[in-house]
Amino acid sequence: MTVRKELAELLLEEKILDEERLQAARRYARREGVALVVAITQQARVPEAELAEALHRRLKLPRIDLGATFVEVDAVREVPYDLAEGHCLLPLSIDRTGGRRVLRVAMADPLDAEAIEEMESSTRCRVEVGIAVPSEITPAVQKHYRGVTTKLIHRMPSRAAPAAGEEQVTQPHHRIEDDAPVELRLRALLSALIDKGVLTEEEYVGALKRLLHGESGG
Image (cartoon, rainbow, N blue to C red):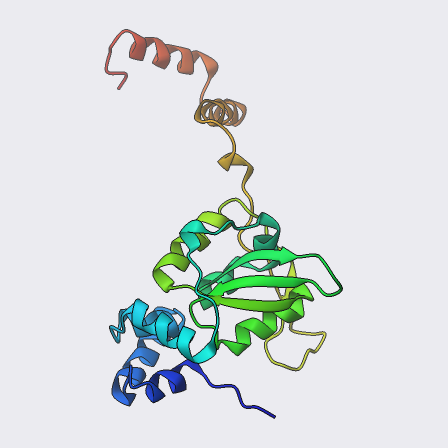
């Protein structure tokens, strides 16, 4: 059985990182709640290009330019936002040809076995990984998950999968108000205030007239 390396081990072997900086990065990751690969670039000051090149050379995985890559909404819906954001990864596409589905994912840490196993388990897809840098993945995750309702999965607190204690993850939720124009939002707000008795229609009209005539409306 082949034991898969972890990111930290590979970077130590490549002498990109030493043990002292690695431990500082681990503490930073725990304190800030970010992926270790993000902490390595931010706190340990490992250049993203150097990190990505080392991973590409050692793992023979493709480099991905997210600025030139089309991202399928269906792929994004398969993977919860908190998994994508917490592990610095972005689902790109699903190949539906052949037998088993294949989910293509851009990852800053392609050695993140926990994230890969979780995606394979929840999506029933084989995961194919490409390498992208954290500074490209983070804004891309925010962009592509905005307004998207992701798949409901059952995230287990441990590798054993007991029926009790499972946590349901559905992030982020789509908000209908994000699609509404500002004028419609204001009309809805006004209607709600009048319905609740906070404001009368006469008060609203009076305030509107004052504004139209350039009065202070205090």
